[in-house]
Image (cartoon, rainbow over all chains, first blue to last red; front, side):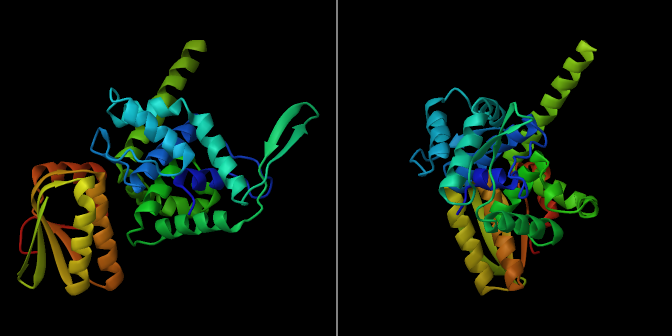
Length: 216
Length: 104
């Protein structure tokens, strides 16, 4: 089974071109951090209250990217709130994406290509070798959003992260997104980690707007 | 966490006392799912819950999901103040049937 982090990175791959969709730039990076915490929660390594994260089991999960984060969490007892940890792991965002891509390549789902755009700019592509895992992620997302059933925990988390990344537009039509807006918000609001990722993205947007205003 | 079972007004009521956190979540989920498997109407009485974490919420949602799949009814009742606060923040009312008091 793919990790949440791998599923989100896989969803961000354009199935036609193999390029990574950077839909909300830093917003996506925050969402990847959220995905890691969800992976650790699903593995019963961490738990969250309204504000804080508790490490409940420091034994490795077997996933190197998750275990690096878990090890750091076990060492840094000075950081307690979900928000502090989101900001801390945000610093490792490139490692997280890279680790997920490497894992997807090793599992035979993607392959790695490099090339040039306009003869100068280096371009990396990750064409699909096996399209089924991405299709599976899309089907689960669509089912979680378009039905009124309670989704599996994993799919609730997936909806929240995909929403933060702005990736739902690649799964559902504009009309479906509008019609199911309340459902998407309700699912995205369920988990503390997801709510704190939302806060982090909103704060980031505010900071960027303030910076632009100052420059202008 | 302490779990109790009783039947009241046609409902199997699982009483939950103490902390519904990661340490207790597995037992809570297993107990509720077992109740749902045996009884068409199950309620979790949360009046004695002093703390509920994300893991505790997930256990309740999983029980509700299982009940729905089996065509059974699942509700939560008598929310303690700490539970009510967390339910309000997370919007659990969108997914769970919530009752003020027993019997459901």
